Length: 134
Image (cartoon, rainbow, N blue to C red; front, side, top):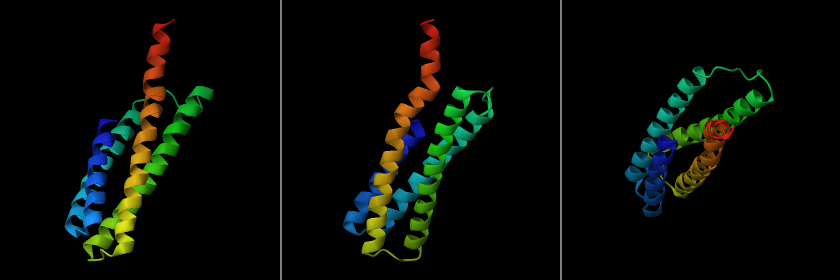
């Protein structure tokens, strides 16, 4: 969760650089975003590997795996979009379409991170809180 939240800094810096037409700033922000997002996804993969249940374990197992699969799929899709933007910017394309793409990428990233906060609480904290009350 922390790496995803901090990765918003890269998206913000890239978006601000896009407003100024700063190709280098857009590149640096997007690269920071993709590095931190990659770390977050690697941590997620390690966490998945350590789970003691499969998606076929029952309704709660399938819901948990489904939530994480869909969020990870959305995150991977946006990371692919970010990489495409990095390649375009690295090739020297920094026109209005690319700047708009950087803004759109940032907004999508903010949404993915924001939606992960309640999902993270539901998936990782609710079982602990629920068991305390029993």
